[in-house]
Image 1 (cartoon, rainbow, N blue to C red):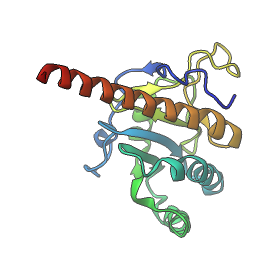
Image 2: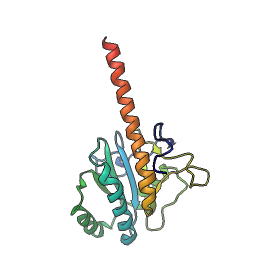
Image 3: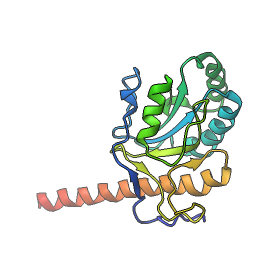
Image 4: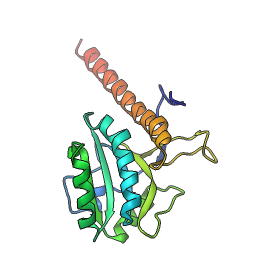
Length: 197
């Protein structure tokens, strides 16, 4: 399904009031507020993390990082800094990392943030989730309510191990959010014009 079912409508809100990343991180310049954020929890198993990260980077990040408001946020366990440094350096050889944020958090804070997404998924013992999540400018988790591949139809996250899911679902759904932003901005401009006439 290359043309998402929501192509010209709004992408459903699945969770309100997601915890802002700045609440659990000392890197105060990183926030979900007023951003379109793709968020992933990569855990301490570097081999698994790297495959997911590189898929997300190649298929999604490289397409959207020039867009306004876009950012990608990877939540990583504290004490994995040196291992991740190698992975991030490898990534930087072929990617502009200016919109990637790598945030190290302790287990408690990582779990707090993950729980605030209110998904049916769990972090594994390494702090890894195989899903990437869309958090909008108002700190709301976005996804699908009638996904044909999901029991009950609700799609809370996008499997980073599946190239087809990233290509056909995550990209479609990010496009919808940008389409909505464009429409909202146009409506706002019209309103201002009408007011000034």
